[in-house]
Image 1 (cartoon, rainbow, N blue to C red):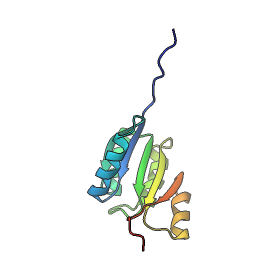
Image 2 (image 1 turned 90 degrees about the horizontal axis):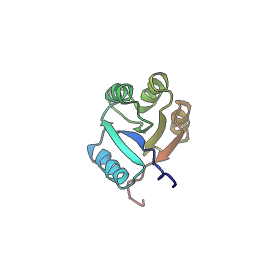
Image 3 (image 1 turned 90 degrees about the vertical axis):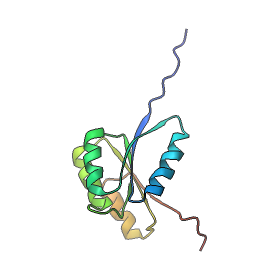
Image 4 (image 1 turned 180 degrees about the vertical axis):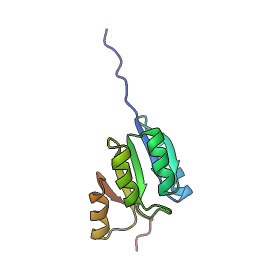
Length: 118
C-alpha cells in the first residue's frame, strides 16, 4: 500500500512596517496548504531576533524598514541563517535599488503594487 505524500510546509516570516500589509500577506498564505506563517516583524532589529530564534525557510522582507533597513537585515540574515531564503517586496522599482536587494543575498526582488494604475 502506498504511503500518503506528506507536504513539507514552507515556514515563512513576514517583515514589513505596515500591519495591514503583514495581515494581508498572512491571509493570502493561509489559503495555501504549503505555507505556514511562523511569525512577523515590523522593523529590522525585531526581524533579526525572530529569524535567529525561528529559523524560517523563507522571509518576505520590505526594503524600507525602521531601525535596520531591509538590505542591512538581509545581510545579517546571511550570517545567522544562511539557509533562509529572502524575497524582497518593495514599491521601489529603481534599478539600483533592485541590484542592492539582490546583492544582499535575496533570491528575487518583487515589486509590490498599490493597485493604482497611474
